[in-house]
Length: 116
Image (cartoon, rainbow, N blue to C red):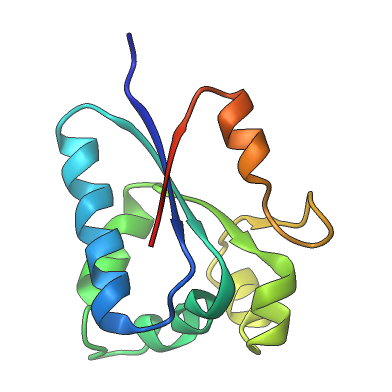
């Protein structure tokens, strides 16, 4: 049976978000089907982590290049002022549940949900 995990990152503290990135890559290495969803105040990190020389920027780029970012909350990124940054980085925006990604969608697809 395939191991499926959706990591929902809500916390905008970089020291918390780095653990989401590390776990996403680790789980992928272990053969998990991993999807990272960036929600809440974590959406403000979309801009700062993409800046040259950003702390944890290289790790963020690895996660992006691995295709692990499945969704960025459209409503929260608009509120945090990073909607255009998400679009410029080609990140998938999601607004299926009143502007936000739906955990129910991931559960329906058989994903275990872990929140940060």
